[in-house]
Image (cartoon, rainbow, N blue to C red; front, side, top):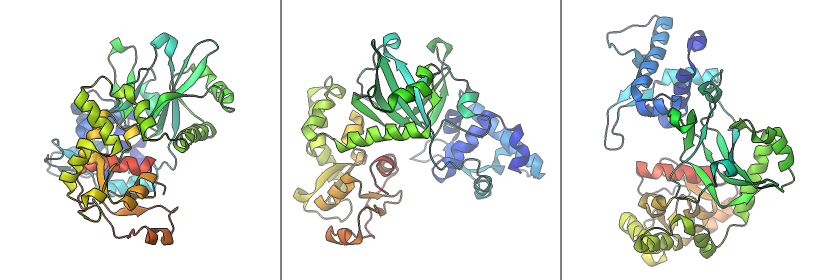
Length: 394
């Protein structure tokens, strides 16, 4: 049936279907659907979502007395303590149909580059980042695509350039999960943003890398704004990130490198943030109060336990660095494996072990495949997903 209505779907309607299909448990609020399609508010999303349901109903010749044409797509969850809005859960039959059609089956995320001309737009300032984003003058059709394709879910790399001869720097990358319309006064049409990403402080010079000249030529000197990157250049950018990981600074160097992100805060807050990186201070006290022992084994020998950030301190905003839900209290063996990416935890708190860690090593470290987090709340999910995506070795 979706094949029959495919040509009748607008780009925004396709965007909502894709966003909900790829969402955890295929569940989104109307506000989230609106953001995914670039609509101004959830009322517009509700209207367009209902139109999709109406197309399906007509095609299926299916009618009931509910009066809700969107019921053919989803069922609804009432607001609760976690989500204070109604949520729409895509019906199993709908997800199965979309999966069989492979409309939204993306084996590898696409990569895009956005250029920032520092001489015209000013230098990118060091700042406390809670989310990442770029602004673009691309049309919505360019962002969504004509055949159910989205920038959403892709990796966006921000590159800046300045000086003569021009020197180029890599500032950050992020995974796009929102598209929003911007007011005309901004000079741009849309913003593309996401919460999961990595900032490089200081920015990484890339002008002299062997592949960069060809990359610059392929992008026509960044003259077309937000533009897709060929896979071979995306691989080179990922190698740059990997090399940064390999040369990761020690704790004191890391604290100094990120000083600009917290130096203007009050002294007590600044000290708490620094101590949180060392695994001491208020952050550890909060974790002890919350977990009452090891987050996995329950061991209550507190002096042996280490306060570990789930989303690494270097990648976190100041608020995240002190957030109790961004921390685990672990025995040293578990902390070392978790920090190095050899173990992680799924959305149910079950331990996941890396293929790089053989069974003998697991036994030597005392790690059991039945281990799981003793507590798990929705507020942990964002941090655990970040760890699995960017720290954990599958």
